[in-house]
Image (cartoon, rainbow, N blue to C red; front, side, top):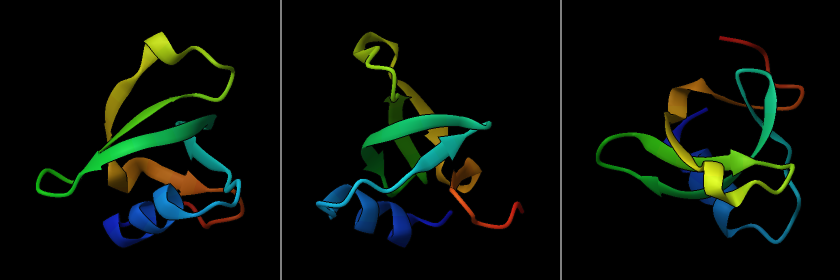
Length: 65
């Protein structure tokens, strides 16, 4: 995924499936300068936020890189 798509997803009212290492996540925010996104698991564990490289995020149905 690229940073422009991350920004679109964060600002979208739609529920857009995003995955990190095959696990469904929510994008909480992003750091454009470092090309990182802050995510947490969709199962509700907000305390397990982590910063991950934007390039490693995938949308459902998106071809793997």
